[in-house]
Amino acid sequence: MEQKYCVFIDVLGTKNIIQQNKYFQDTKISILNSIFSDLASSVATAIEDTNQLFTKKIFIRSFSDSIYLHCDELEPLIYATDKIFNAAFNMYSNFTQKEEYTPFIRAGIAKGWVVDFKDIGGIINKTGEVNPVGLGVVNAYETSEKSNLSGMRIILSMEVFNDLQANPIDTSNIHYKKEIDIFHSNVPTPYYLKQISEDRCGNPTHLYELIWSYQGMNTCTYDYVDKIKGIAPSIPDAAKKHLKATAQVLLDGLLLTDCNSQAGNKFSHARNQLEQLIK
Image (cartoon, rainbow, N blue to C red; front, side):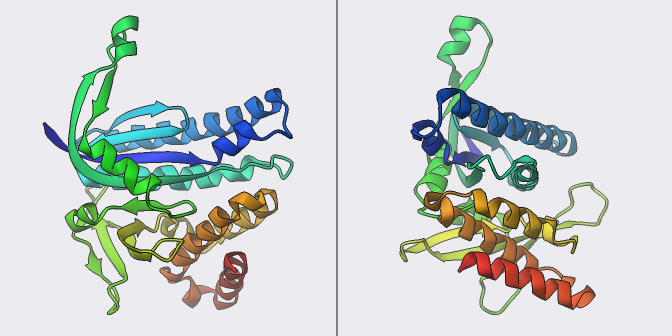
């Protein structure tokens, strides 16, 4: 049995789309096609780029509204998952306000043994697919699905966080920084993490999250603020918890940048807009 780092990515809200009575079936299929075709493009590009940059390659499978990844090393998965989330968030600008359902995705990253069994469909269809089974798969699933956390979050188990060996950047030990030399250029790319002290019900957790929004917010163009404001009117009431939590992730990314020193007024305006969405 091999130890793997595993990622479980879930598209939030697909059940509501499928079961919603106010849409005809053709409309539901059209919405789902838009969601999954754009997401497939984002994921494919991210995995292809990652597998070209890193020696250890990422395995990927998808089923229904979920995507599963695993790799022998953690850093390729951090790079790929961060890239998937940024690409997915950027795709939201392609939706109109008439399309009420703009999906958010959530990921759990965990560690454990994984065995690749022959996939039953692969055997029958003679296509050679494998079916990953094991503790790593279960841990990644539960880190995401059982976390009781809302919004576009990349959630790390404590074991994965410890393996990253990130350095604290404040005395409160809430925020951490991990540098990864992705392009082997001796200019490491910074990734920021945050301790999650409690879930949305107030229960204590031992989880961490990757602040995926940092890369986009660090441009100081505030495009992500415009995007989330643009999709806010199309989010149904049942999904407002995901909107607020995602706005918090964007705010966390903004506060980690140096944008305030470059254009203080724009920084303050962007911060105020995100804080209004979080309320």
